[in-house]
Length: 267
Image (cartoon, rainbow, N blue to C red; front, top):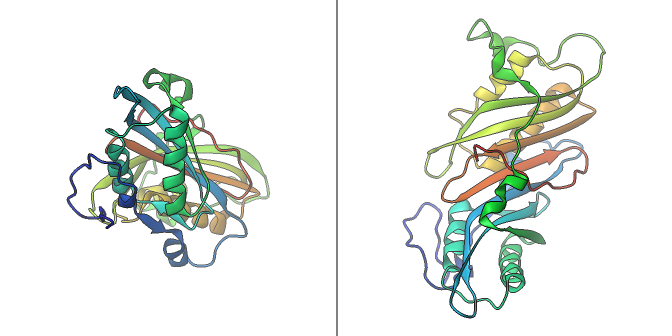
């Protein structure tokens, strides 16, 4: 019998428990956003900091996992159930790292109804995938009035086209189940008419009391920027801080991008 973790108090399992994984439909969140943009592709990058199992000598194996799930999958994974599932591996024996990865990808793939990939790193290997985004820090130039940001037009007048990366560390949203705050850094890689920095920052700050899953928040950002600016190129990434030994970086774009494993130091 499956144990449902979402919104419940569930003890960490001590036996392999793939049935504890819970799916979250992407369709419902996207329908709430209204008509979809012309194109949206992307992925969710999960960093698993507490990945551990036993080898055939019953010796604990500790590592960091980087899990990639395509945004085209019908479902994503509820994070608490993912944490509990990973804990269920702590006392399970695998003949090799390759076997562990195959089982984990198979279990998560069945829930998301898609192929997933898992890269395993040693605990001291995080430095190789850690870097900070470079771009225009939006909060470095705050508006003079509390109302300026939300009343300003999205794009400056004119037909000039620029390439820019906008960064804000002020992304804050609420879990739709627990109402607990989630913090992240939003990075927008953009080609189009210049965006009004105050208007964009005001939009990001409007998520402070918004209750939605991480992936849905990123898609809401993507939909709105596409709608308001009609850019030639757009990629929205949110580097959410970890909770329970897991963090997630959803990435959405209007053009195909090669998934990257990198994380920020604050994660």
